Amino acid sequence: MPLQAFGASAPLSLGVELELQLIDRLDRDLEPAATELLARLENASLPGQVSPEITLSMIEICTNVCDGYGDVLEQLSFTRDALLAAAAPLKVDICGGGTHPFQQWTQRQIYDKPRFKQITGLYGYLAKQFTVFGQHIHIGCPDGDTALWLLQAMSRYVPHFIALAASSPYVQGEDTAFQSARLNTVFAFPLSGQAPFTLSWEEFGRYFARMERTGIVAGMKDFYWDIRPKPEYGTIEIRVLDTPLTVQRAAALAGFAQCLAAWLLEERPIKPHADDQLVYTYNRFQACRFGLDAQLVDPQSNEAYVLGERLPALLELLMPQAERLGAVPALQELQQLVARREGDADWLRGLLAGGRSLPGVVAAACERWAAAD
Image 1 (cartoon, rainbow, N blue to C red):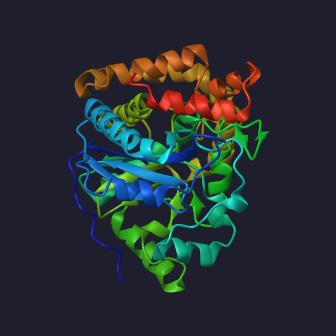
Image 2: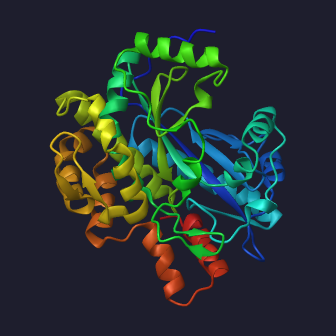
């Protein structure tokens, strides 16, 4: 089957997906409550949808197509409140964060859905280990060539998204020393990482056809790339972000993505090149391990720099786009994050350092998710 035509969407429109943790109120471990929770939401009128994810202790919420930051925040806030109301009778709490701090992957249960069973059959234990939680951001593009150009240009900013969203310092009861340990699980899948370098939708179609002939893939969902095109939506999808601890931070990150895309497409400040891939994996690792303190290498000049020292200038550079798109509060929130050097991973670590147990850390994350602002 040939790759489907790229379905044009409104340029710079947004869509956000958040994978969320379902938490038992007593022991603060993950609770396999997705089936019951989804049943309670079956007739709810939501701005978007709530769907199962690969294991029973997680769900995914999705917005409808949004114009910008304010629309994303409104939709996510509405859905958050509906989820909390539906989960309360089940004695289940909900929280963000890229990993659960102490859950054991061996205890997870696969959701009864054909695609999830197919993934389990192919990837074995990795399917249960895939109980990690990310934010995906869709950005609308008018055509396939524009989508691929934006995908390659955005790839230079993958470390920025990782560092700003990092919220997964703990895995199975241990401090990993990573800001985003979640991505180590994602990287275990063979079709993860960076998309191949091409700026032509026609050429990408030929690549997809070769991959399909191997039997490795049947559709775009089989690629777990950090950024991938979604022709059925007319978007590119950024997939490297941990789920933040609040809907406010999730909306701010979507606003940042929209402003960055607008600047890249309007100014064309860089020329995507295949050589960008030479430092891509190194830069991505640095951001996962060290967050804002990551030591990155510019792929063209080979200059080394500290991510957190460059981010303030980038955020200020994007303010004209933010003013036009209504995303000034989004960039201001991220400016404060960078200035304090305190993202979600740092906040979680601070709780443990302050004397909380790991279950106490989860309880605080649930409280933070439920907070109205």
